[in-house]
Image (tube, rainbow, N blue to C red; front, top):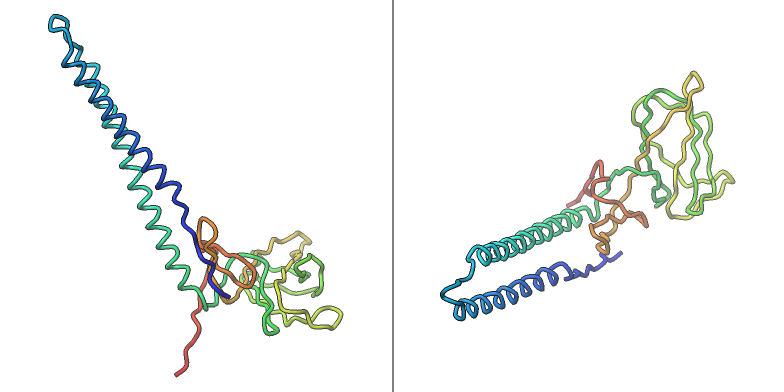
Length: 223
């Protein structure tokens, strides 16, 4: 799958450039009016210097703010470049991330489930339309994190096609109290989506932000 191309929108840079041009034009106009006033002032009733000194200070403050905005834009662009470089390094790697939806590929879909305490659970697997296609009841879950692998076999005995599947777990402890099970999934990063404000890792059709990644495993190379 090809990496999605990104188009940078120049709106922020254009706005700053326009603001700088505007303040420069206004400042030139102000200086022209000021010099004209000074040339034509009444010697017996000179202009109040405090007023145009304050205006000069205001112009300087606005220009300084524009410079600050330019510096912030540069930092934002640098951060985006850094994020893109980081995201590209994930392509081809197997990641573990927060979420309940995993890709069934080559007959394997893997999740990691975390139980705060021992529980008995019913595990359901749903397809992309939300239909439950596989159920495993009375599953014993120990406290902590463990892996759950589904081989793609549906409850009717047929093999599910490759695609995205979601795990749903209903668990209760020995006292019959509901237990909340957190889930993570594992999959290979196929590409990086750059169409939004931040790069997203593509695992099958799932889009994962970098902050959701919990573990990374690079593919092993053989000589």
